[in-house]
Length: 144
Image 1 (cartoon, rainbow, N blue to C red):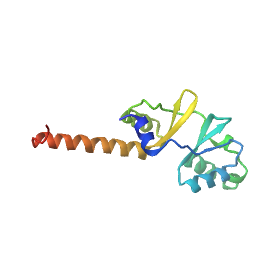
Image 2: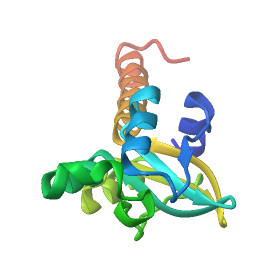
Image 3: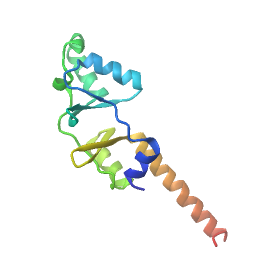
Image 4: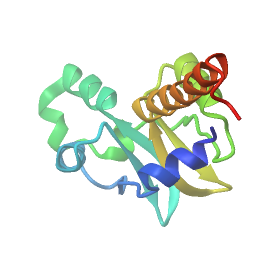
């Protein structure tokens, strides 16, 4: 299964914020949408990602700075990205290797979606369930 199929199922809507927001304002966006990361964009171009981990790191250093620190100063700027044609298991490997839970999917410079580790695991689980069913049917002689 390719990432494109995962995005087709879940939708490609991506919650984004501007780097000029405060981290506290971005936290409110995370809570409002019940998500663990937001993509940071300016003029439609990706500048970074702000994750729960970034927020926790900042809060551990100085919790009072959440309302004064800008997203642009707290975000992760060295992004690991995928493309829609990536295989799901490849994306899982990339995410595991880099210890990330959110993978922005790009088409050139355009953001086309985000997949979470949960999306990837669910897709892999679904693939295995289908494969197992076909194998059971084959063993039982039900394949025509």
